[in-house]
Image 1 (cartoon, rainbow, N blue to C red):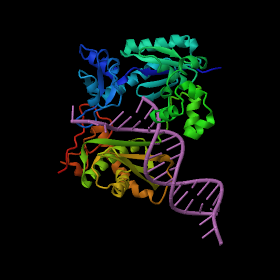
Image 2 (image 1 turned 135 degrees about the horizontal axis):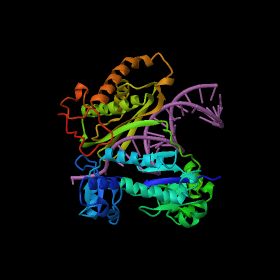
Image 3 (image 1 turned 90 degrees about the vertical axis):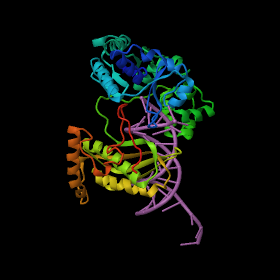
Length: 415
DNA sequence: TCTGGGGTCCTAGGACCC
DNA sequence: TCTGGGGTCCTAGGACCC
């Protein structure tokens, strides 16, 4: 008995959601019909394309490129600032709608979901009809279009949803691979990015079909385990389950690109403290502790480097983690102006299975204080309490995280 | 007014142990 | 005397995804 998996992919997600919202707000022009993008704030150095309309795509505007370069391609380009909270809401509404078609819906990303349609025919008909029903209901009830890909596993369903866009249903079963997937350029395959594609093409492997018939041992010697993975994918082999439970947290981090390069140690440390506050609050919110603390820095020339340390006991307090963050920073920073910094935590443990240790108690009183502060922030807002060192510093006490358009980070100088 | 943020997984190489 | 081999753990960096 074979599985039927759907992959639902919102067409130009951020841009579609922005367009729908603006129409609802009474705006006349539909962003989807004109060359437009959702893009970050250039003054705060977040000026990249986050999503593009289909007319913008005709100008060869790419997701991730700078707004500066996008405007060179299309001077009349309309740029809309992002509204992440709105997009989260749209995503949740779509998930709710999909849950009416199957109890097993996996939230894969803000704009992509898998739905296990196996054994659902008796309720909603054959897969293609059900997919059309889903697609059309999303359009009618929520106002945006999606592609639905249907396949025997998640990989082929995802590849199917990526075929022709927008507002389409495609199937991609094993017997259809030769016609629908193998002629595509190898970089269209999930998990073949630009680096791998370049290596493959250098060896004359240009299409997914070429990859499918390449000798596995050759791919292994070229790309190690990743070579075997993409060889399987090129042949439609993938068997992970659609899972609607939450994935266990492996690590979490927050980073920020600053509006100005940071040159002083004092300012850098304050920003790191601010990032530490943000990420540790998230850690504690999940009732987690971490053993590995990592910082990463991107300097003014875009050169990136990182430094990490594993501590003996899993910790979660702002102070204990910041102490390590500070050490790490002082060990690697060589005075070069900083564009971006991040703090990331991994090797995560849940508090309930804590191995009690003599040293863990050091963190206990701090943790109580943090808990109190976390609760105040949750109840009265993130600005209700903050460390006095941030007062008049020009630095946000909680740096990092997604930034909505009305909430620009403003880091000038502490002097 | 040029280049985001949040993730996961893998590998190379060094330290260290027996 | 002149250079093992296996194993684990750790760090830094890089690949990929959205």
